[in-house]
Image (cartoon, rainbow, N blue to C red):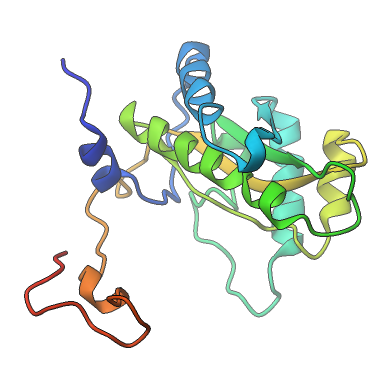
Amino acid sequence: MAEPTFFDVVRSQRGVRLYRSDPVSQEDVDRILRAAVRAPSAANRQPWVFIVIRDREVKRSIGELYRQAQSPDRPPPPPGHFTRETEEVPVIIVACVDLGDRPNGLDLPRAASIYPAVQNLLLAAAALGLGTRLTIPFQNSPELLTELLGIPEGYAVAALIPLGYPAEPDHLGGSIRPPIADVTFDDHWGNRPAAGAGAR
C-alpha cells in the first residue's frame, strides 16, 4: 500500500488521548526519530535529545508526576485517558533541548528549535497510523521529571509525547480548523485576505 502524501498526513495528524496497548515496533520508532532529526534548527545547532520510554514503572512514575503537575481545579481524566493510565501507553518520548551556554537563561532560537523536530515526529507517527499528543506538563516543576529520568544540567524537557495506536473512539483525522482567512492578514495587521480566500 502506498504511503500517504504529506498533505494527507497533515490532515490526519491530531492529538490523541486514548491509546491501545498494542506494541509499537522499534523499526517504527526509529523511522519516526529519523524524521525528527531531519528538522531545521537555528544556526543548524540541532539541540535535541530524545528519551524513548517503554519501561512500565517509569511510565507509571511519569503519570504520577503528570497528575501532580495538573491544576487542582481541573477535573480528573476519564478512564482510558493517557494521563490516567500512563503505563498502558506503549511508548512515551521525552524531547529534551540542549540549552548550550545559557542553561539558566532563555536562548529563544535554540530552545524553539526543538519544536520543528517535535512536529516532524508527530507527522511521521501519523504517517505510520500512530497517534501522538504534544504535552508540556512540567513547566512549573521541571526538576521532578529531570530527576526521575536523570537528565543532566544544561538540558530542559521541551515536550512529553505519548505514542501508540489510537483506541476507540479516538482516531486520526477529522480535526476541525477555522478558515485560514480568519487567522490571516495581507501585508499589514488587520487587512483581511480577499473574499473567497481560505477554506477548512
